Length: 208
Image (cartoon, rainbow, N blue to C red; front, side, top):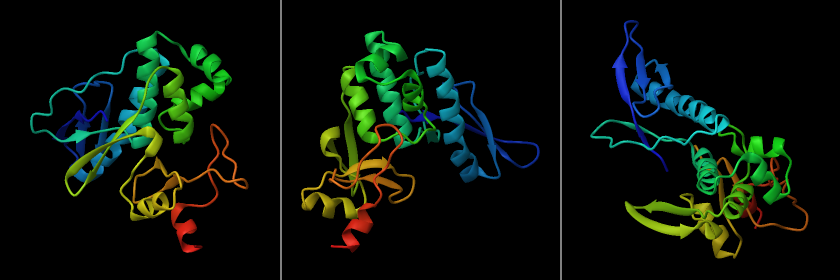
């Protein structure tokens, strides 16, 4: 995940300004440092969307050197991974659309960092573009690497779901669990771009 160092500056009206040395287009403000850093995520993703639209390389983060850092959301980072794989192959959106059998508008949404695409679709996109996700999950300060085909995540419900041989994949986790894709069943169908399974991991566990 790309974590970009930021500079925090106290503004004249007692707000805190956030700037990104590596992404100079990003400038945002907050009531205090915490608020400013939270707003910086959306501002960063908006700017990086512009890089994707203009078919530019995503800037690499510089060394933080003790400064605070801000990273795109987990979902946004997965989309940046697809875009990076496309750039490595010299692909445009039309090439990815042909490889996946999708129309260009679907690819626009797939690469939009602020659009709630599904992890399964992003994993497929990365694969056809020649990439592969490797997820690092921290448990008690220790890192564990796992492939995108067998995702782990921090919530205890994931462990329980995986123990029953259900495939648990991180959807979008800003809090404990926001959206989780759990095993494909006959009565729950996933739309390849915008659909979500109807029930969360916790719902499933409570009904067992």
